[in-house]
Image (cartoon, rainbow, N blue to C red; front, side):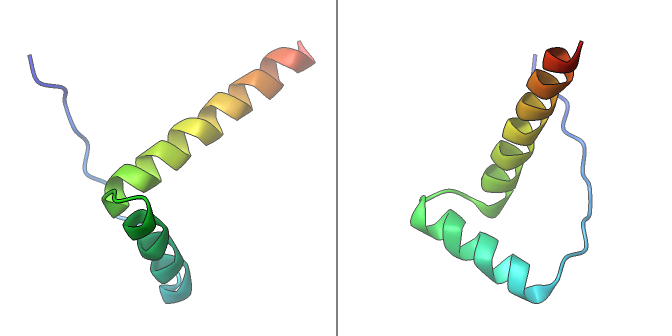
Length: 54
């Protein structure tokens, strides 16, 4: 069964978009894949810090 995908628009400064697009191109990844990966890593780090405080 295919995974459900949520579409989400985000506004960002043009310079940030250019930096992310350049990074994605260097990694031979789509901009979407790069941003999803960065968000996943940020959530993982946040959860680790939250558990460390418990």
